[in-house]
Image 1: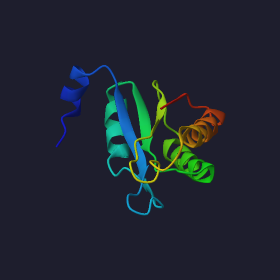
Image 2 (image 1 turned 60 degrees about the horizontal axis):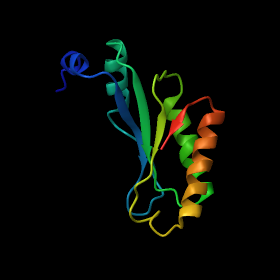
Image 3 (image 1 turned 30 degrees about the vertical axis):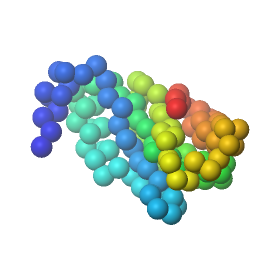
Image 4 (image 1 turned 180 degrees about the vertical axis):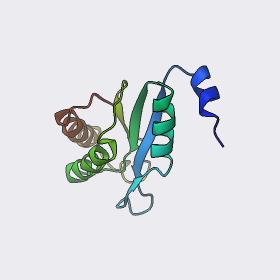
Length: 121
């Protein structure tokens, strides 16, 4: 069990995993099962937060799908830090050129920024 008060006394902020695209097929969109609990407990202790999404997007269509899913996960929550796209997938994204991956990341970021979030990678 996490002692959130103890954690809060030892950190300046937290970046929470909000969700991820499933491993293997890279098709399933998943909410992190602990996201709500971490968010609610840390918010109650006034810990500033950001969030991230582990992406497997290898097309701009996938980036839009992931970003839209993430926007739903973040709805109604407040963040003092950016919302990050975690781009380290070594299977789906590995095949992309730098230019293609950059376009995927830009598409994801643009979608989140249009929804009012400050985005990081």
